[in-house]
Every structure is written in structure tokens, then in C-alpha cells.
Image (cartoon, rainbow, N blue to C red; front, side, top):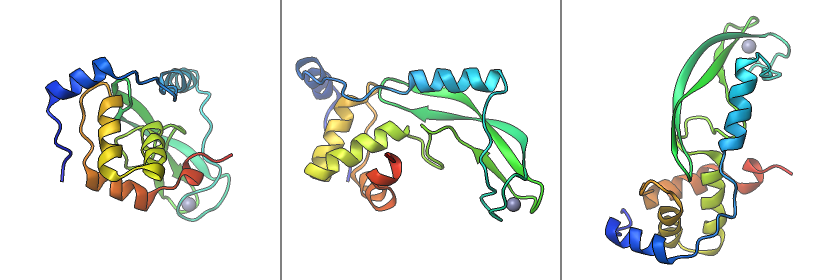
Length: 158
Ligand SMILES: [Zn+2]
């Protein structure tokens, strides 16, 4: 059940809608993260995700991933993994603006959840389409999943 808006129509709407960007995009956070990574200043998670023991994590390997945000699609963001010396488990150490297993930046999900508080799934999908600069359509069922999976309180802790 995709929101059917022809791209031509989207361009027209984008040109005519005064969509103030109310949320900063993640470029600043990303740059800070990349600089910390380069300077070996990243902090490891405190406890192991698997056995919950504290202080047993060592940096392990690295991989890259992509991230869709409002302004652009970032590719090749390096992510470090950690290994627990107690149980042998490995998992990734993600920066705050990335949600595990999610292609979209945290700010996109937060925006979507805020929209869903006051409008329908279809309307929220339409607003996301207008706000995302790359004409990426987010399916209504994706929004349904996000709403089921995440809460604003969990993603934006005070
Ligand atoms: Zn462990």
C-alpha cells in the first residue's frame, strides 16, 4: 500500500510548499562521529549486549553501512564492532543517530512518529516524501512497523 504520488507532483509540491526544516539533519553529528572515530575517541558501550557484563568489551572489527536522512543518503559510514571477552559475543557499537537494523536515520523515524501522533499513516508518508530530498517513498506498512517498534520516549530520552 504505497502512497501514490507521482514524482512530478512531488517536485511541484516541494517547490510550492514552505517546508521549514524544523529538525536539524545529522550531518553535524555524523562529522563529529567520524572525527572521533579517526582520532580513536569513540566510547565503547559499557555493558555486553549478550551477557550484560560490564567492562569486558574490546574493539573488534569494522564494517560500513548506509544511512538515509532528510538531506542525503550517506554511504560507507564506518561502524565498529566490539567483542565481549567474557562471553565471546560480538555486536556493533552504533552512534546515537543510527538505530540498529534501520536504514533510516533516527531523526527520520522521530519525525515520522511525531507526524503519526496527529495524522494518518497516509498523511505522514506524504509529509515524509516531501521532506526527504531524494524522492524516497516510505511505504505505509513501514510506518506501521515503526510505530509498533519505536516510541518517541525511547528515541528521544530527556
Ligand atoms: Zn558478553
